[in-house]
Structure formats: C-alpha cells, structure tokens
Image (tube, rainbow, N blue to C red; front, side):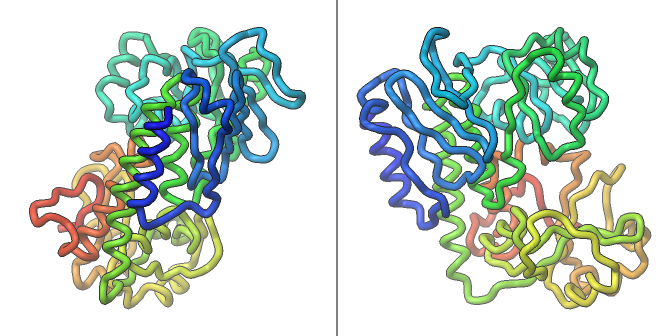
Length: 370
C-alpha cells in the first residue's frame, strides 16, 4: 500500500501540471487495511472519495452519494446508497463510459449497450454478435426487456442526455451517474477510470493506468508551453445554417492550449455554441489551423469541404491546406479517446510543433487533410 502511494507521489513530482481540485483522499484507517487501494482524485470535479476501514464513500455531483461496501451487512451512513462491490454486470449508456471499461480490460462486466454505431472494438462487436452484450436501444426509447435480460447490478447514466430513464427506474435497477462528459480538464475526464475502477474492483489498475496517462500528458504539455510561437486554431463546420463551435472553456479548447496553440474563441462557454458564418469568419478568417471532426462517407477532401459550404475557401487555413481532420467512420474516436487525452494531445502537438515529437510519429486520430 505504501509503495503505491510512493509511486503516485513520485509521478506527481515529475509532472509539471496539477489539478485544480487536487486533494488527497483516504485516511489512516484505509491505509492500514491492505484490502483497500487508496484513490486520489486530482483533476476530476464530478466525483470525490472518502475511505474508512470497511466502506468507501463516493459523492457524484451534488446530489448522488454512494457507499461502496464489500459486505451486505456493512453499516452505511444516512443519505448514502449502498453498492456491493465489486459489481459483476452493468450497462453503459455512452461510448465515454465504455472507454473506461476498455482501458481497464473489463469488457466482461459490460452486459448492455445502447448501440454499436461508430464502435470499432472487435471484442465488443463479437460480444454483441454472440449475445454476451445486448443492445437496449437509444435514450428515450429503451427496450425494458433487453435491460432486464442484461441483468445489471447497476446502470451508468448521463443525466444531461435526452433521458427516458423513467421506464428503467421502474425495473428497480440502480442508476449511477457518470459525469465524465462534464469535465473541462482532459485529465479530469480520463480520471473517471478511477471511478469505474472502484466499482469493479480494479482500483490498482486504474491508478496505474491513469498515472501513465498523466505523466505522458504533462510531459508533453510542459514541452509545448515553452514554444516560441503559438499558432491559432478554430474548430467546427456549418450545419443547417449555423456554425457549431466549442466554447472557450471547453475540453477541446484546453487541449489546443496545452498543445501550444491559441483557440480563437476566448469566452467562458463550456459546451458548444452555434454561430452565424459571418461571426465565425470574423473570429477565424486568419487562423493558422482549422480542426474538423465528422462522419464523412468516404475520404474527406478540400473539395468536399468547399462543396458543403462554398465560403469555406475564404479561410486562411483552407487556402494554406492546414485543416486538421478526423473521420469518425474511420477512427474509434469517441470509443476510446476519452481515456487517451495524452494521445490526442500528441496528435495536435505533432501538427502545431512537430519538432517536439519523434520524426516518424504516426498520428492516431488527427492529421492534416491532404
């Protein structure tokens, strides 16, 4: 136990960046119990952890409180919902949630998904094909029979989604919010692997995986912070008459900054915002790079980008062929990238500041459009 804590301390000392809500969880009772692996929440803001000798208290957001216990007769504080851990069966509602299980090599625990759109993982697809994982339908139209067939100990939900959870609530199955999608710090989103790790009995693995992610991210962020010049970048495309762009405080905007670039939108918006073309052009006409993520059928091109909106050719990034692109029909973007912020960061650094990565680096998600 002490060895694990020492490793975490060393990793933190080596890493130049730190979480805004860094706080050490656990106490001497937990440390003296070899069966409990201490969890330190450093970047995530959506959950916190407190350990005692025989239970772990986990607060999710402002309204959900869970007591993780290993014995059914363990006493639970008032206001906390009991969860007997490790859980053996669950349903994931989003790709972000699923990514936590993938990186922890825990697909055996996943017994249900909303669907397989944009999923590439061969193991998951095989499990769906042979029935080990069932498809329960999409938000707002869940198939209750399939939910019951999955027989989950609990179901992970995303409260901001379209919902439709009333029918599931009637089954009596516990619903546990997974708020990773709300995190604005890329490392905070990835840190939700610790949340899942606690529930499935893989705390040690979650700690080790996250420490590696953190170090790689922080090392590269530190290198990018020292660059002499920072290019500008914008994001998104026109759809249905509006330009959907991420806000200035968004997760993606933070990755741009950590990669040594400046995002053209500097506001306090944390989610997406719809802008008129003229507004976006005023902000980004002279930006150095343009990032696009879509599901184009086939090979995307500058010709296709112009065909979708003729005015796109007016941007400097278009003229100079500096469009950064990822096709979700060809890359497992949402399926695994939430737990690979270090990989996303390296893709962008390789474009903005190629001298900071190895000469033969091959991008995983994003590359310059040819």
